[in-house]
Length: 136
Image (cartoon, rainbow, N blue to C red; front, top):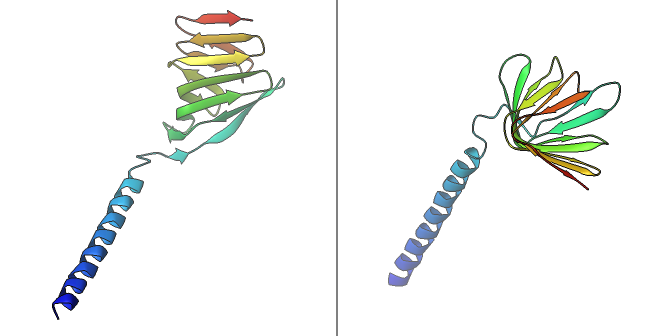
């Protein structure tokens, strides 16, 4: 009789521990993406010369035309790659502005800057702040 009571208490303890761990995992998984409008946004800037693919981990709509891209933002074309952490992209003008540390990589050139501006439908690129240019 005593062993049946011990066994029953053990089973109840195991089930409680299991269900409490499920609840804890559910709370953790719900807090992974806080207040994100778009998860892993991907789109392209099209102009007459080239196509620039844009991707990020998170995106938030600022208004009807502007999107804030966050975490691992990547601009990639056949000619270059730009990496940064935060960009405001304007969907109407197809422009992008960043005021965070950015790295531009091309065939024989690497530029590290404090931000950049892609304008004129992706045809022009301007770097902000202190910039370091490495030519190979």
